[in-house]
Length: 278
Figure 1: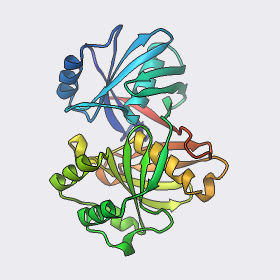
Figure 2: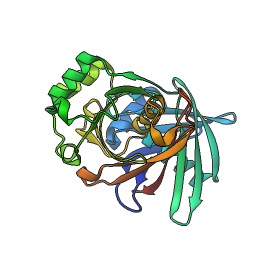
Figure 3: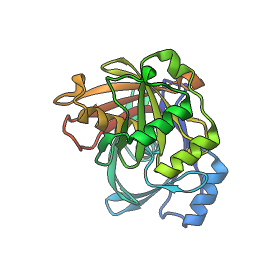
Figure 4: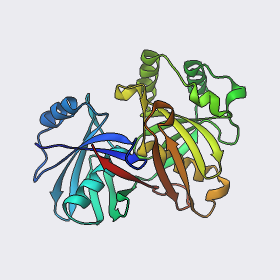
């Protein structure tokens, strides 16, 4: 196996979230995929093999297989575009089907994923109290414009919006407590957000379940947020629209995720970004 290393959702030639990418005629055995993902050491490595007119795709963290990973999908889209040609690639995942499109621009390759269908619901009161305790937050620090939400776009994400950018910058939590909480509630990330405007959101994603304190760019969480904002009738997204997420700034890995929604509750969400080879 000859893995590529690509940072997805990069800001030019900086930032982004690294992913391993392996494209072969056939998928390796699960044990081999797990071993390589552990050796590469990124939060996710994606494996792809042709399957008729689709691509069979699996995602692995260093510890386990995962159902869906947004940034690894963007990295895969760019790798497929570079290897074959620009276009749309249909992906058959372990728990559903999605697509990713790749295009070459003057500034390099970009990719856009179409997420699984979305849903959201208000965050359970008990879980909200646990999250407030985990991050040392009070009700006064939460932004009522975006109520605490559980969002889904292939996996589950807790979403908490903060009133002040400074509170987001100061995000911290006990890793072991956060890991146990995420395992208990089947959370892929905990997204802390600051709404800069109706169309620009700054994000930090706690990712203890992935073995790191924070994830620099999270396509799945971006898709879940897009679906949740549609369900909340977000002002700029009624009837469809787009917004931008800036993530990774406070950890020195600035990343940009561009999100487009149809405006219809439950629809798939499109998440796009650039990528750079590492």
